[in-house]
Amino acid sequence: MTQPSAAPTVERVDERHRYVILVDGKRAGLTAYRDRGEQRVFFHTEIDEAFAGQGLAARLIQEALTDVRASGKRVVPVCPYVAKYLTRHEECDDITDPVTPEVQEWLESELRSRPRPPA
Image (cartoon, rainbow, N blue to C red; front, side, top):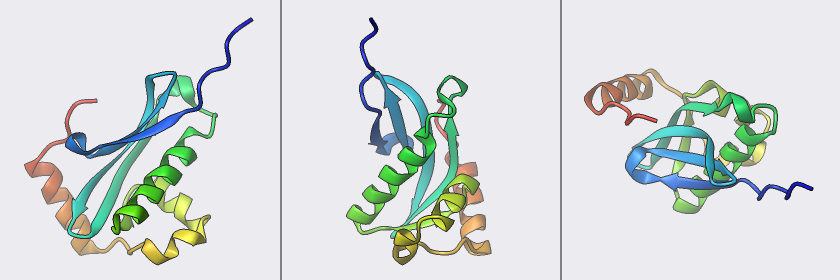
């Protein structure tokens, strides 16, 4: 008999500007962000292929957004997955800001000046 796997856990990793989802202690995916004042700008989400189809991306984003709310920040969904998630979860409308050209320019500049750390 195999042991049931532990429930996935989500952790915020500030020094790497990301939330990660762990399954049995292994990183199954991440969502990357940069903070712009009171806004947390999400720009990339990925789930490793070995963990696809398990609902982990939704769980990751749900817990990340819960953390954003608890921290008093607002969400800017540049990442297409986060944007799609938010269209189905109106309970986050009160903490969501639109993606504007200014935010996109700021993010591009931010990523050029401080490249993402390696996975």
